[in-house]
Length: 381
Image (cartoon, rainbow, N blue to C red; front, side, top):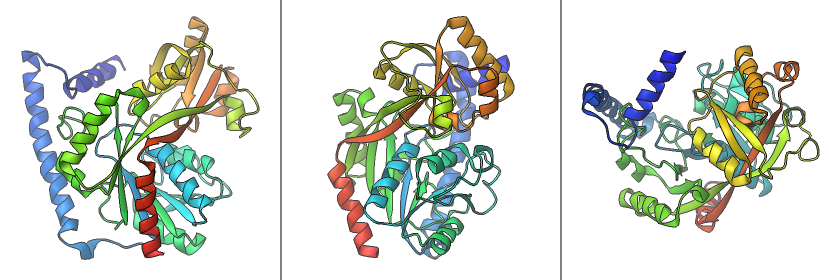
């Protein structure tokens, strides 16, 4: 485990934007070579679809993609939930399509995570992000599987869906979309500018030209000058697409048992008031979650960080309990992590665990996003 942690830390250092030492050059050379191959592979795969539009599948509904150009968290899950609720409130029949990353159903075609009334699969079966969406979106079906077109047809046939929200779809070229919205993490928008594995870009920056709109997330964690610099970089590659700004806003912090039982805001709420906590997360950008806790008024005394999409074991829960007892701190985690945490073990170890719920709120550019959305919906439906 220690060797694995060291390797992960070293890789993070190599792919960062900071200066490197001469002894890092061999490793950097290997990463540059691998990145060259990766870049070529991505472009070949893209052009195999872009140059042959007849190979794209068309779903019998409006398809709105939310995606990004980097690995790591940009806030797609809360943004997808917010967008789904807004469209639902306007009278549209909406469904969400999620890949079900690292789940048992990821490669199985398509499966119904939620029919809008009941959550039918566990986080292990359908994926942590899809499970969170299913819990958060009453009345909105959530489907999982790598074959998103199959999921779209299933949603239309079974639920009469009019609007499909394609979660993490910017690189899913096999399915035609009517609108491509790209989210950009304001705290780490493009990494060091290199594609994987030399950097964190999923594809070259010039591919931003495909986007119809951009939303810079976590805008409250950066300066105005930084936000303007990111917007200028986006316009350099895509001058036509509007650029909006959004923030991650805590909505509640509930005791795990209350959150798990769906008791909402009325039971077990934790008030910040400088309360010392340990941050527990398995995210692409754990520092952003810890910053959100601090900005909400908590004192973050430490953290336990796990690999993104990590599935928690008894040993993990035991370690959390030991850290809580050792520090005298409460534990706070994300909803994305909470859906994977085994409730019986939380109770068995009497873990002082709370779950922070996050919403997305626009601070600039919402009117432009709304205008594009309405134009697409009215044009096709």
